[in-house]
Image: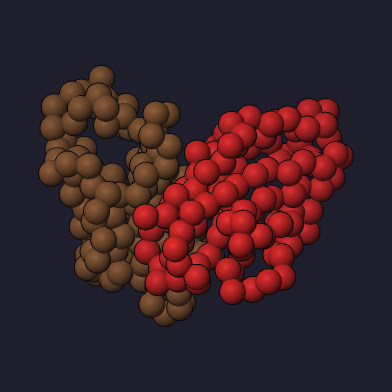
Length: 114
Length: 117
């Protein structure tokens, strides 16, 4: 069975600084997809970034980038130039190549302070 | 275009009553998912539809929970004889499904917050 672990329940960062959120996962599969979702207080789950396991290149989306280490089963999210609007709960998630359910980590609550 | 919509936004019910939660996926998305988010359990998968069939309903916690999808679009999650432990936010997501290939992104609705008194 696949598992996803986020070991940082809470983090804080000053506005304009950089922060990295950690995620590790466990799977025996070789092909899969990884995601970071953001959930602000409005509770709408919003996709931040997606990574295909077969791609060695790390995904980037504007200020958001990942460090994907397949052998180590690690998938961290780096947020550069943090903004107040980045304050939210961040979830790391895994899905098998065949699709179906997302498996989520426990979440990291990020606070961006002015 | 419109995103995933869910209704009601909030629902307060008494223990023992039945409730129905509705999800309207993004137009053209053939796959639909229900998840539950509670303080103690985090985000849990409940059930997955591809079209009108449910290839994976392994996450339904008991036989009090059921879901259906008709016309390949709207889905209803029904909880019978609600218990206090059913209090949670119920999230619905949709994706392109078979038309989109494997591992496609799931897009979430705003959720229904259920409180059982």
